[in-house]
Length: 580
Image (cartoon, rainbow, N blue to C red; front, side):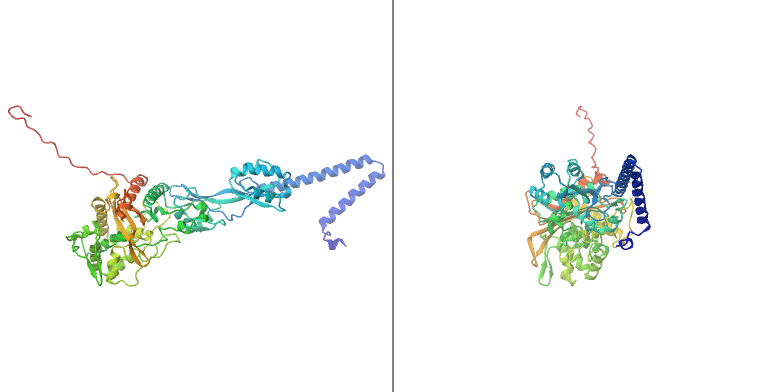
């Protein structure tokens, strides 16, 4: 076979071949002249030259590998975790999620010198690793996965054993240091680096784009506020043996979500082992009939349309008859109520009369402007659409006035109430932090005067009405309770209650001041000795009050205690007899 056909006819190969033949002829001349010692010296020099070239090649390869392998200095091949993700942090820079280096351990039986030694070393270093898996890998015929992910510390311990046949692959892994706290809001990603839920999914493109320089993506939540909400919500839900619970804290001026809790929760570090019930974000993905918290909307609409004033008297001694149905109050009264009392005593009769006076077209127009006919406008893809009536007849309008016949998500409820409390502007909820003092324009829903009147009614309800258990000393808390019988199998069930409390603080100050809403929902609470019942005022309101008491310092809300006037002591004038 010719050199042309073997591919060795290139100039480079021809030069090497010529040099080798020249060297061999030099050896032959040396032997022919009888100088054997020169022949030996030349051959030694050639061998040394070849060794130098070989070691130089290895050095170049090692240097090239070190330059390519990355900053961790491990010299390991990348695992299958896919492209990285930038960190997620809260509004103050606290870490919520980050990629950390982990390692997977492999064993190649062809490189093992002493199987017994490798077996002993692995059992001692990784006691949780099944012995059967070690034996199978040692007796196998190819490189096999043994364990992972391993922390850098575990990797170093195994590496220090110096056992041939063991190798590692670097595998960046997404880690969530808060565990189940804010899990539904933060979300999680898959092993390929794609965000699947929560903020990880909502801001997936941004988080992926920031992976190169590890530029963090900031979220609006505050981990201090989140921790307080989590602890109080879980304490209330577990004590009341609830089916589920929701907590939500927002800045009503900006729509920023400062905390979001859904219980039962899950650990995003082990999302794959969580049940669908745990993974569901009840704050945005579930819809409920919210009960009497809807009276916030009903009273605000009645005031804004000037159908009522707080002092308007409504007939509340008898039920409202609508066809074959009669709307009654939980506790009947023998006197008429003002609109203010309707709110404070949570009268369904009074709320129905207000809604019917306003009329279906106006009620639905306001409901639409308050965002109650659409999924809550928040970045989370899980945000669920409401369930609304097909027809808004008088029966439906009256039912909706106290939170029946329409089901919305807690996030939608929070955004709507925020519009009533912030001066009258509907501002979408957001997970993105805003600069201090920011005031998104929003859309006008009610007048500033209506907003001011509703803040006063909310405050009065905590001082005198059904929300008294939410009062936090010096923080001027306002709120409205809700207790809705749940619909199961198409019928309302009396002992299955959704208890809620929507609160706002502080209620005083300018309408443009920062103001915060705390929404607590307890799904199917069971009355205990502490609560004394299942209503929102007895279950959700106390939890909200505890949350507000804890988070006020973090939000910069100062306590202002009302000064109680003390009458001066009477002056006693001494009588002539010397009495004092």
